[in-house]
Image (cartoon, rainbow, N blue to C red; front, side, top):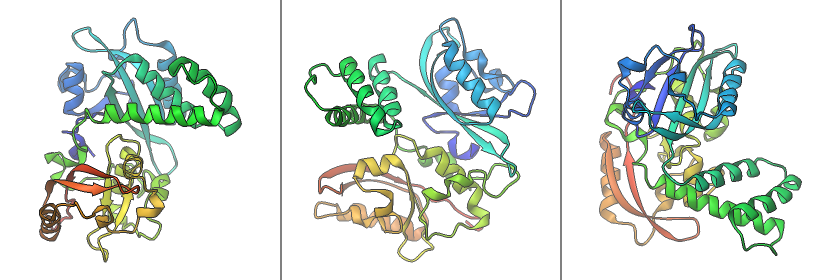
Length: 328
């Protein structure tokens, strides 16, 4: 994990709740750049050094509660850089559990939000709305529409929900466009991604439902595969995993952002070769570069015209990174 994310554009931390003070045992380069501290200044410390007078008490309580219960959490929190400057942080904590279900590590993904406060409020509000049952969405949708989309007074609850989802999707895409391609394309991920020593084969066993249901995960690969899948499933960047050893080189995993972008559900794409995204305007040279890289076990980056489920074309900056075994 450390090798895979060290050059990620997203801020990544790993902490150990079993050690007194719950210290940070790893932070990546993006974290150091964002907060202005060097690794030597933060490793071994609890991350509360990022807090200050404007840090929300409720957000801190949510983090503490999640850690005490061994749960995951996502919060928006105001943190402080080394310079004293505040920044708005969308923090996602993921518990890595052992065979008994106890949290052994916490992986934190920190996103500095540079967009307007109102846009962020919309994203978080719509995310909460989507998690509500249908009968509860109606009243909440009206409240959110009044706050974020004046002018829809006559719309039905269903129409309001659709409009809110569309607005949130456009805002999320604007955020995502500011990021560079997936952290899996960083040079540091050339090395085999090592599984965390959590004492069980599947530290993220609950992630198995995200994979192609006909795919057999080898024990030697299960640690890193479940870890990566769990870490990137809600990433705003489109991430896929395929297995070239299986006939047809099928996709065995795609994340939520991929499905939103191309318009296909997981069940429609898992088990298929990604050539279903190609069409009349797809560049032959780009396809040849991809095929050549896969055949030689190399990495590649290409710009290629692909097709969504609707038939709409889109320009895709595709980066492929080979994950190798001990024999290379």
